Image 1 (spheres, rainbow, N blue to C red):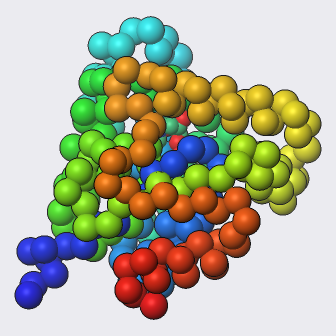
Image 2: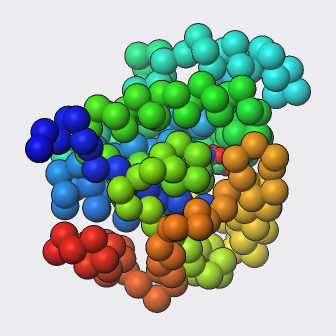
Length: 225
Ligand code: DC
């Protein structure tokens, strides 16, 4: 059987801070698959819109900007580099202002349509681990394996806090929790492809699991350990 004709697609959806990125990268590395970070695409479009001082209310302009953009994800040796129109924006897309705008940009159906098209193209070409909010519900409803990664909001807040501290940023824990809850609300109540668990997704609660244990659990379920 030729893999390129029949790639394996593993989707990992879930709320912010559930560990999707680290788990998806760990899984992709272990299996030798390509990793697709769909959030990085929404973030890149948000960054470009900000740089052009575009109002997110002008949906037509944001959709046009998306159509005229190129976002490339390069996953090599466990490192993802995100290129927006050829520029490395891996760090620039992780700042709080872009995080907030990405959540709003992700509500625009025309933007989602364009990005979902890019994501499907990437998934057709290779074995992939794709993470996001709608990977198993909209992008690849016929994925080989679908997982929904969740964790208690307090634990998700603590993880984010740790990441931010490691990056030298001090934030108030309660404020951060509020931001995470607001983003969960925004992502799961929007009309266009809201964050929700696919009916046939396997739910993994990572509250008490390390990254390694979560990847082990997923591999065990897929019989790939
Ligand atoms: O996973 P992340 O934090 O990088 O995602 C950034 C934002 O993009 C988040 O608020 C939700 C949105 N998003 C989405 O709506 N659909 C996706 N497939 C991925 C992300």
